[in-house]
Length: 202
Image 1 (cartoon, rainbow, N blue to C red):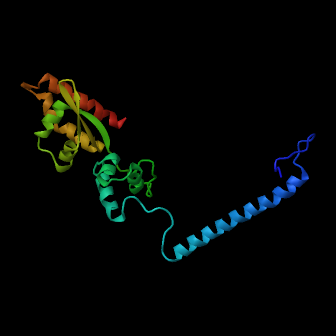
Image 2 (image 1 turned 90 degrees about the vertical axis):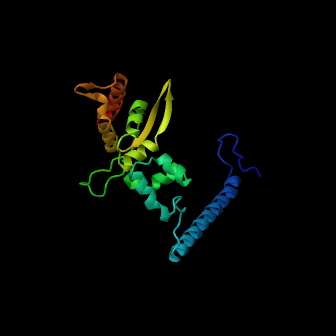
Image 3 (image 1 turned 120 degrees about the horizontal axis):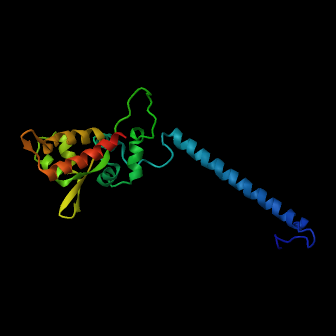
């Protein structure tokens, strides 16, 4: 029987077709309801055994603390994803409450600073590598990515804004001192970095 047969003048489904379609529709609804109920029963039984529904987190529980600590120390989400061989989404899930879009549980608590990536002129990077830096500053430089710029290069450094400000302060000698003016190219490089760091507060 043609289940799409319609009256030639009115276009309505023929009564015989309606008679056949309605039981089939009802049977389909009943089957879906039964499957849904069986699914709920299975979930309740699993919960009673202590099993949680849903996918397991891609970052194991024993590594979550290490991921969160590294993120707060300035490691980027992309770098952490490479380190742990997981997706960036998995890292975002592990550090969800540290992300800027998350509302802090304590409204009075200051939001943690998030790492930002800035291009540091190569002349500034070379000076800082020979300077007396703390471990976090040294790590930020060591993890930077060098990008060639003609005869020179730029070091792409990812760190929290406070670390960038500290690095900027460390290279202040490049401006020169009274009686000992700095090298123009180095002064220019420091000012480029200073402009980029200053824009973080805007």
